[in-house]
Length: 239
Image 1 (tube, rainbow, N blue to C red):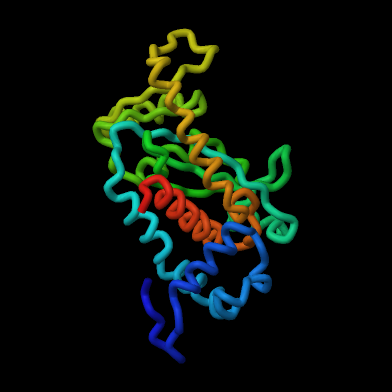
Image 2: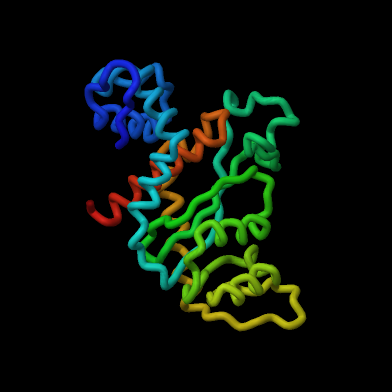
């Protein structure tokens, strides 16, 4: 963890990091942080600094750098936006990545997960964004899909996605929609392994800051997402 060189030296960065993890897990307010982690103002300052300089994102990418990429699952899940986080002007909802759906205000989490359940790439969008529109940006952000087999549900069967995967040298196991005149074939046994990404989402949502979005700022919510994903990788790899 990078040290802060301004002001008084920090006493225990590990305690501050564990405090941020406690906030992510419990979903509590910063003011309710137990004293053993240090002053909540100091811990919050650490979180803001590591959010802004990309430390939490770099930790996530470093942990998943050696993940097996032969088979990747793509999907999304929604996170309900709390009443406090949803108090924004309507014309600012898109910038904060908050979308209105039939279930209320939501933020959508998009993920690539390997066969071991390790999340290798994450992004967020407004809750009313279509999965097919966010798939190519997510795959481009990850980049390392050549030779991989991409497993997805029918929402990812759009022609533009299939052409992109073919151009990148990747295969796909995606069932066609039922109203196609000329549906393609897919391996049903391979498709059954797609449940691994649903289990990954369940593990991420064990962190209450992910199951419910309490942050008005989109980058704060994404920073907590990177932190929760790092903890999931730790538990899978038994580090």
